[in-house]
Image 1 (cartoon, rainbow over the protein chains, first blue to last red):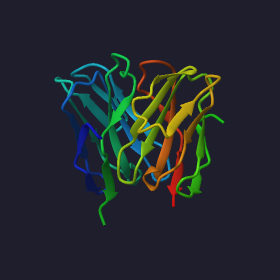
Image 2 (tube, rainbow over the protein chains, first blue to last red):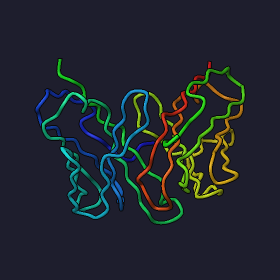
Image 3 (spheres, each protein chain N blue to C red):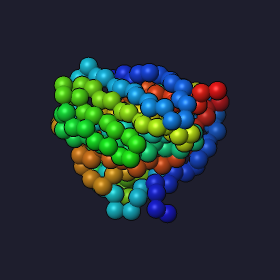
Length: 114
Length: 114
């Protein structure tokens, strides 16, 4: 089952708004990643974080690796219609035999405000 | 092609039948992952290959599921005696090597078991 909890589960955006979402875990991960998935496609990597406390930007996206290594957040500034989709956080332990696999959260669904 | 290629894109089968799903990773990528994604959920890890060997198969749900990567490139996921609960999108991803969480996903193979 999923070990990563994402919130909110869904949100509505209006063009120009800033959006925030986060991901928490009961256990430590040594790498945090954020992926976006559009309908009928596979997830696409947005940002990768490798150090606790790290803050990384990619265009209008900013993500942080929590200092406890048990959480991460993603911000999207000045949202545009193509930001609609499902955002997944993923953690990787990078240690031990099972350390390479990514564990994914349940996703945050970003929808356009009607 | 430049990306991860998965075939078939859609497969409808009857309960009890055998199914093979194929993944052609990005050329030169040594790491290959299979994930399963049910409707409304995040991807769930099945198996990870580094080269030809299955380095971590801890996510395979039972012995009806098996995967191979005989030449370290193309991989096949094999499901025997399919059950309705096997219906999902099966995603393949490849990466440049061990320890990277920066994966490139295919579009997935949607399996429906009637």
